[in-house]
Length: 440
Ligand SMILES: [Zn+2]
Ligand SMILES: [Zn+2]
Image (cartoon, rainbow, N blue to C red):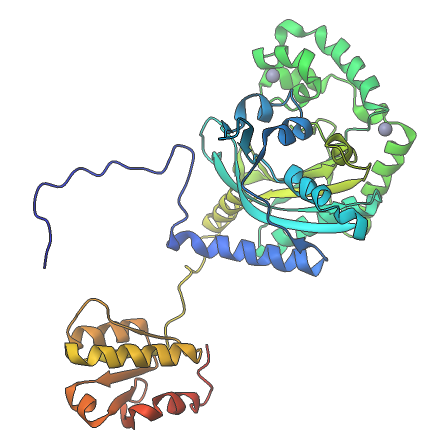
């Protein structure tokens, strides 16, 4: 063997700060969550959409809002070769709406439902459960203002959590009003908060002029105490927002989704109107959201489209998986590791000259959907048999120089140790005739 024995350079590469590899051993939960998500989305009439990882920077500035944490300091923004600015998507709602407008999907059918699964990017201070590349799966129901649609989105999220067996989540909802009633409340809130300006944390002091609503969900204890003395937006909602909020709450109870009305729930994005919600999990500490969403009736017109009401959510996949792991640890249960199912057939080659034929048979079986594998490490027949045993295959095909000369193979049925001699030309047919059928 030709191994370089000279001094090896020390290996120093690591995954970039704030990113995580999802190793094969971690895939079980990821796969389960994705599968359950897809099933639920499609059951409810949502179609998958995939948008690029990056977009024109202006799309996010216009939709998320200039005075938000995301746009001010968390975006990965680059100049590309044509002197324009691109940004790795920090969320997927704006990209989905961009696609909806770009392809004029509203012309064929105004009401459309989409879902997406994929990575998002925010330059956050790395801490437990907060990644710079993180994954979301979400839905957007575009083209209707019915409060029942808000409830549908919440029910999709809760059913996903129920189906994956995540106990202990809570649904928190609020209304943040609309462009008619929100400015009134904003002024009142600002006035009242200004009376406490010096007691607020530094960040919230700067929020007073930029984004006063965010003070309401500041995690600083002093800010929390002050915001609890503030008036509630619910007392300032206009008639339309009020009846919308009432319809959402009544319907949630009718279909059996308990919720907490949380007057301090605002969201870090400017585009929300009326309903906002969060689903949290108590095992996650301060940053406990596993799903966040709401209605955004002005987003499409903000980015240049017709006025079309929409509602949607994003589930944080890392946070959900962390919550699931916490629940499982508490119950001392473990999730079955994903293992690729054992192949049905393992082909053992004896001697270098039989390899070609074995490889041919391997591909013959695979083409017929029969899962099969063989050795690429040049190991002894004995070692190959050990692998077959370890994998738990049902059949081993052995091909040595004698078999090669005669044009046949030996098939060993592992359960009974029975050995059968077959013509090479009959191998495929023999496996296809096994009962139960071997198709994987
Ligand atoms: Zn309103
Ligand atoms: Zn604060």
